Length: 139
Image: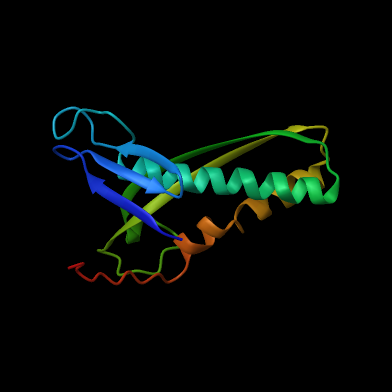
């Protein structure tokens, strides 16, 4: 999978994925607010993945899932203020909070299963696993 980001002006970036193009930017001040900022893009990717994964799962099971809404927020907190964090207590950790709503004639068991499945989407798994990013310069 190749994604290309190129400078447009100031902090604006044109992002290309296959035949798709969009703009990322920062809020007015450092940017002109012409598109979502990098964290909004990241959370958007996570939300999209959770929705797609749940829809595919429900379709495979023949469940009457009609709609999904995912709301995500991100903050930085000290590990000591996070009961299940394992980092040094004085370290800051990124906390992504996810709320999900399913619509359709679903049983409580189906709703519980879909909630679990949402946490198994590929982007969720990438964000919660060890990830390495190796950067080299292009000539």
